[in-house]
Image (cartoon, rainbow, N blue to C red; front, top):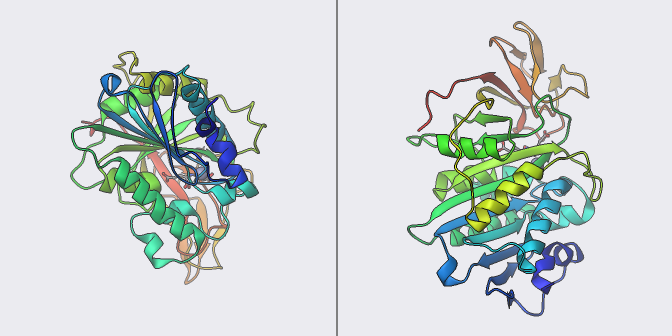
Length: 334
Ligand SMILES: O=C(O)CCC(=O)N[C@@H](CCC(=O)O)C(=O)O
Ligand SMILES: [Zn+2]
């Protein structure tokens, strides 16, 4: 296999390839751009006008999505997968991947949309670099732009695979993209209703891409992801890459949720009243005291059908310590 197909090995070893550009047997160009960053271009006559950004390893310990991108890249490098669109592969936080940790000092996925400018250190610099790589990749006019940022979660989940869809004023969420996500095995989509500081919020809000964070199961170390079934997503990604995607026109069975409230941790006094092993999408009764914080702040459930995702009292002050969500309908989709 071509050396650049081994982007994961290069990244984990902290090595820069001697040769930055390579061609596969069927004329696909692979170009190493920076640590953990590789662009794939189909031969000119085979380009269908789509630009696809696939990222993982934004959290270094979320290995199933890293292994999935590694398999796709191997397939392309060996000539087994024949791309018809441009692809940018990104491993988000190489040093955290090497250490098997979510992050070193700062969560990279809280440093986009300008936040990296208010911080210092390697992760702030990496977020700035990722923004630049994505901006440059999505700079060509008249092409479709799609970004999937792949993650696994800290805890188990009542709904195993789901997507988070960013929000921008004046822009409607796309039904077609949700149909595609359903076909890729996602069981639920959380429709955001305000701007955010994640990677997909950046590509959605600033680069006009359709962008989704995909949660694929529970985070485990490399080689221990047998319990994370990414087969439907993997099949769909190959089809998108090869331009052979079957038509899909149903949202049947796909659960839609909206954000009711983000629970922000304001101080070290923050207390979250949930068992440590609580699963994502656990339902919470009306009247339940979810959290308390400084200055007698209390988070009491007021919403019918409320559920919690990503509860995490260990986040830094000022950051999201959980999202309260409620069921919603497909009425607002374009
Ligand atoms: O399990 C958790 O608590 C977090 C899993 C994870 O990393 N989720 C992403 C979601 C990003 C988004 O809101 O689009 C994150 O928290 O960064
Ligand atoms: Zn993650």
